[in-house]
Image (tube, rainbow, N blue to C red; front, side, top):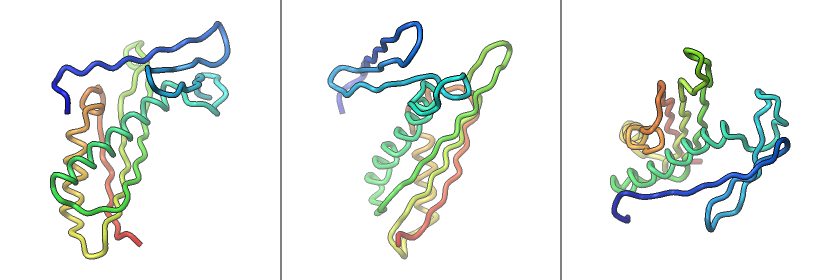
Length: 145
C-alpha cells in the first residue's frame, strides 16, 4: 500500500437535461441519471445507487483483506446495501445504511469465526467510516454448495 494521504479524482459532465457522464482518469466512463424517485428514468446508475454501490464494494474489498489476514477460507461474499434517504431539518441526506452480507464458506468451517470477521470488516470499511447515519450489518454465513 502507498503511504497516506491518498488522492482520488472523479469528474462529471452534463447539460441542462439528459444523462451525466462520470469519469476518472484511466477508467471507463459511466452514464448516470436521476433515480426514478427524482423523476429520472430509473434504468441508469444514479448518484444514490453509486453511493450504495461504493459501500458494498468497499465492504467486500475490506473483507478480503480481513479474511486474508485471518487465513479464513471462503468462496463467495454477496453484499447488498440499502441506503435510506430522508429529509431532516430541511436537508436531504442518507440517514441509515443496512448492509446485507451472505458469506459462503467451505463445509465444516467455523461459522462464528467467519461472522466475527464479517463484523470486523464492517467496522474497518473506510467508505462506511466516512458516513453519517446509522449503520446496520445483517450477516449470514452459509456452507458453500
